[in-house]
Amino acid sequence: MGSGLAVCVFDLDHTLVDSPLDLRAVGREMEAFLRERGINVPARALRWSGAELFDLVRREAIHLEAELLAIPVAHERRAMAEATLIPFAREALAAVKQLGFATAIWTNNDRVVADFVLSRFDLLPHLDLVVTRDDTRRLKPDPDGLRVVRERWPDASRIVVVGDSWVDGLAAQAAGVPFIAYRPDLAQMAERGVAMAARIGSLLDLPAALAD
Picture 1 (cartoon, helix red, strand yellow):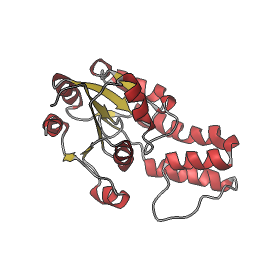
Picture 2 (cartoon, helix red, strand yellow):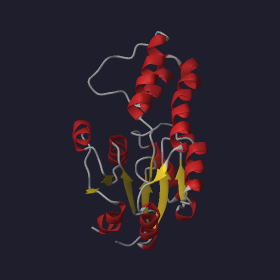
Picture 3 (tube, one colour):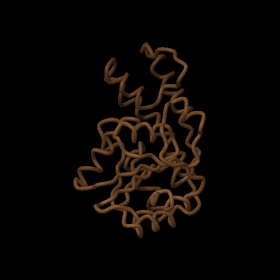
Picture 4 (cartoon, helix red, strand yellow):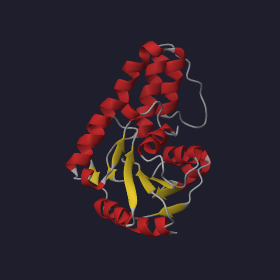
């Protein structure tokens, strides 16, 4: 690793912990909620992400934002209550720290959910920063979470994002930082135009990917 401070930024759900959170189901419920209230959600081939639907409601029906937010919150609470730790998550975090990286979480979940699951699996001692949707102006795939990371470490010479989803990859791309994909859906990555600096099938492979 070169000189200067380096930061490894992890997604949470399906990267460090597994849960039954179904983002497609969340999106479908959010779309249905808006359409039932007369909001035009244009049909398209690519599914609408939660971030895009929030942007839409802020433009066209800001009075519905709180009710719309209640949909993913309910899904997240249920899913994280059933979460399990992904194999070697703690070991990977410890190894990344040993390489000299600062470590951060960047999740579209809210603070309550993130703190609950990180405490439950004793991951907080391995983390220097936790960025949730409560800390950002816009959700991934917008790169605003990395603004918070850079405010914490303004002198960082290297930032790497690790995640499983296309939203993680596009957020990293938009910020101009490399993306390491953990067990990605390759078809979805290609469909969304996500560039991957590396792809890993186990968190044990992360230190080697970071060293490349």
